[in-house]
Length: 485
Image 1: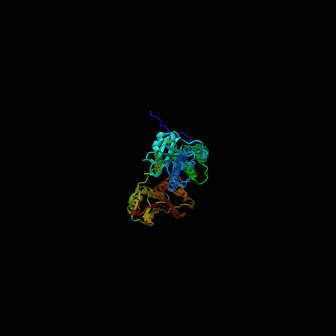
Image 2: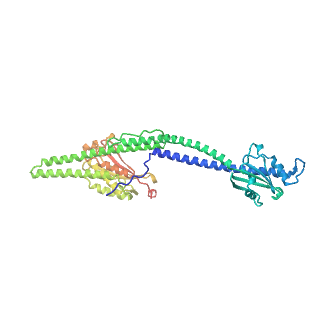
Image 3: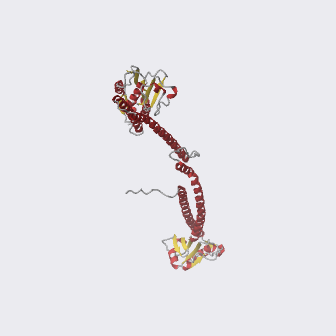
């Protein structure tokens, strides 16, 4: 027991999938922007904190270099006085702490002048932290405190922390919170952008897929007997190109279906005639031996004609297969001599072999022989005993453009001007068929054209009514060095 394989692929409509991919790509882009902006803002906050610490340190170093007490106009006498004067002049920001330390003496900048009542963190009461900030081996760094991350730097008086030092501390948690508020606001704006992207993506996907829906509708409406529906084409983009290609495919299918129906109808008509003839004679078959022999000969003749029709139909059916022709290098001179010998057995005619191409052509020798013999048989049908039939071949064109022409000329009634374009159609009987010694099913010349087409060439006819006709093949035959592979 066999089971149907599970259908592969997504069951989600293409419109939703396109919208989803647009939304996903926008979400990834916005997330990358938010992460990048947050990282940049945090990094900028850290750079500003470092810059503020460096600025305070440079100001303190300049104050030390001046070394004059503004109250006495004399040099400072102690580290405590230096720290007291400098720190007393400072107005730190809301996230900044300035702490002077000289032994057990501690002095912190008064924040009330800057409009702040309290310090972000009481460094004077955190002995463990003060010990780390006083380490002679470390002059700057970061610390985690109950008030959040702290970036700090220290400037020693006379390069000796034992005399005294100024600690500049910046608490960055407030800056991080400000950054997070900006990112949250950007996130809300991004959510609005995602909602707008969803709407625009849905509408855009609908417009893009509209021709595909039209194509689906047309494909669903097409029936076995109605191939006239076509997809509307709007614009000149890729979707329009798909619609045009689909319409072209429908044109080919409609043409092929029409050809198939006409082919089947014509074949049925051609086969119906000999069947009717056979049935009619068999129904009237009597007991007279001579009559029976005559009827059997007629039945045998009609069966042979049916066999030829079926054989020709098989040839035309095989023409659709890729191995219909098998090309290989063929010596054209030998081919023409063989053809002339085979034509001699077709009928009592005066066979004349004129021009003979000398050289090699890459063709299917058997199919070409079949086509030329068919042309010769066609010439026999339109001529009488002893009439002249000429054959010939020649090369035309140089190198890669070289072509092989083969032809058969007869002295029959010729082809009317309006018939030249349709004479190679299947089941076509030209006006000259009225004068033929034995009319065929109208498939011979169609086989000739099929063989020529399979070689990439063409079948042709030239005729003057009443003065005979020349049928031929025009096949590509590039020189050996030009033949691919």
